[in-house]
Amino acid sequence: MTLAPSTLLGDRYALVDRLAVGGMGEVWCADDSVLGRAVAIKILRDEFAGDPTFRQRFRAEAQNAACLVHPNVAQVFDFNEGDESPGTPPWLVMELIRGEPLSELIAREAPLPPDRVWSIIGQTASALAAAHAAGVVHRDIKPANMLLCSDGRVKVTDFGIARAAGSSSVTSTGVMLGTPHYLSPEQVAGQSASPASDFYALGVVAFECLTGNRPFDGEPMAVLVAQRDQPPPPVPQTAPPALRELVTALLDKDPDRRPTDGAAIAAQAERMLGQHTEVTAAYPAEPADAPVAVKAPPTSVLSVPGAGPVESLVVPESAIAPEPVADAPQRRRSVPSWLIAAAAAAVCFVAAGIVALTQTGGSSKPSAHAAGGGKSAPLTAVKVASAQPFAAGGASTDHAEEAPLAIDGDSSTAWYTQHYATSSFGQLRSGSGLVLDLGTAVDVKRLVLRLAVPGTAATVYAGNDPGSLLSAKPVGSSGSAPSTWVLRPGVTARYWLVWFTRLAPSDGAFRAGVADAAFAR
Image (cartoon, rainbow, N blue to C red):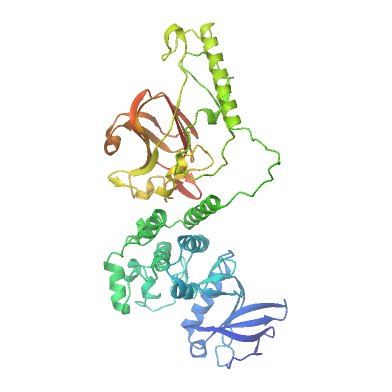
């Protein structure tokens, strides 16, 4: 069949102009006369239209893509089988996407900025999550099949060699489908493609976005051997640690060790992009004479040993929380000096009331920390000098850039571990934690931990040697730690480790996190 502008398909779709020519067919822009909209039509090439295998593969593409309705997947509207005899070839009507292939952007601008890479990975992972949930493995994830829209959206296209779970193959035995540079090691070794194979290809795409090069290049056969046998080159140190760790994990030779939860990867990317936007956003200017609205700070019951039943005495959490470290991200406006003075006065008033209760018999037992005359010594907030992720046996890359968020005095921000497929860290490690450095050894009477993900298994260790914290005696442990975890260790130490050994569900996967750590002596 000769294709040209104005050619009419199905008495409905008038071809306008040819957009692309692929391995199996041509893609045209067309006018849908029934719905009055522009669409894209993929038409199987004449030389393949009479081949039952290609016709079946083309039909499978239509069926696989039609079962997916997702903002990051090119939607299928219609399909026509055509005629097996010379005449009308099969054609597939799809959403018309005005954008460019990622391959062109990489060729023109790589290496791409980390934020752009996070966006591409996250949106593609979300599309893969939808496909895998529907039982469809794409099998050909590559930059040429990822279209970038002007509004920043990514559209995954070309399910031409996708295969539904449980379906029969439409290829001959021994035929390997896919592009060598993005083919997973297990596929090269002769195993069937799986969701993990799609995520390996996504790792290759991410590596290419960050470097402008694919992990392995050269002649196809040499590339296939390298995919199977050689370790991939390291992700550049110029990439953020969290992004490096994710891409490295996606490129793992063992499919069982790769992240395969597309929803979790998408959530991580969204969180990373959201935090960057929040940190860099400027507050709008306000008139000098504008009224100041003061939001009531979160409150917490002040508990002092020996002070008796004073649960009704409530003080602002900011009065006992440490000050933000100098290099922590500034997420809130500075508190007016008059408000700080008022908070301090409130603390003094409450402390005086506690002493009065103690002196008038409010408690039957003297305070363990009472000064002479039975008076309770007030607690003093301890500033945390720094925070760093920690992993047994070496440094951790669990979002090191987020660690200051655990000590900024703001419970709405947090440091998190990576997302993992299971609560046991996907069998990748025994635990993960955060080391808090007080700058000097301090006798800590009270530690309040705000955990970003409740229900994790956590242990707190303290010591003066950060390298031996895991061998120290625990100062607190919980098999299912609450959101607010209060410890009264009475231990003198400089370094404090919050160590997680079991993760809890969060954002479609498993992770742990520390939103705030408030020490008092």
